[in-house]
Amino acid sequence: MIKNFNEIITGIKLMKLPQTEFVKFMEDIHDPFIVLIACILSLRTNDKTTYPAAMRMLKLGKTPKDFLTVKTEDMEKAIYPVGFYKNKAKQILDIAYELYHNYDSVVPKEIDELIKFKGVGRKTANLVQSKGYNIPSICVDVHVHRISNRLGLCETKEPEETEFALKNNLNKSCWSEINTLFVTLGQNICKPSKPLCHKCKLTDFCKYYKTLSNLFTNR
Ligand code: SF4
Image 1: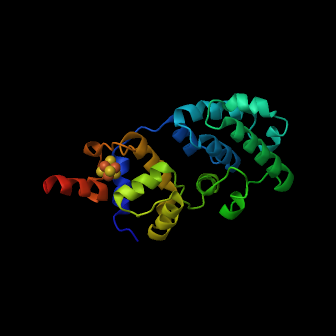
Image 2: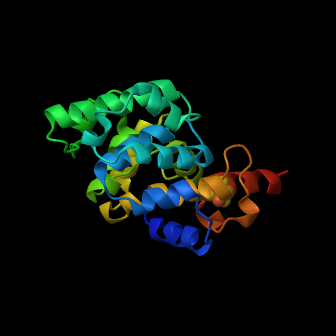
């Protein structure tokens, strides 16, 4: 188990970082179907684009049944310009159709069942578990993967490895809050190419920061 993880959580909370509209929206929704389709929209798309697209999509419907009569071109128009909007429009409508006809409109809880749907990977499945069903789960996106490695919580190459490493090393009670906290940290401070370490309250726990500091002091 990673001993100082609670201090990391506290450090991030103390920074009081602003959340995007999309992050706030995802924090507030607990409907598994909406979590699922909103997460699909967000893949490879920034939050600024995803949020209004999600709002337009939800005007077309909020349940699998609602989407049965939605035409593909209307869904495409609603979610444009999210990345791969044509594929995503089809995936969302196909998932709605399948849920309605084969699952009694109930989104499955199990990751292995969720990833059978086209367009649904482990990241989305974990988010459905944690936000839609309140089941402890870790949704590993690019921010969670990058920051976990920088902090030294794991040493992994792929997000899926990060998910398993974190699940092995962290207490279940904190699994579900990691995504929102790390996403917000990644969007504001621990940015991909130039992390703003001088503004970060995690320097005492951060492997990346300590390695950089040692490099400068040993020059
Ligand atoms: S100290 Fe720097 S690298 Fe470490 S988590 Fe903070 S911003 Fe990221």
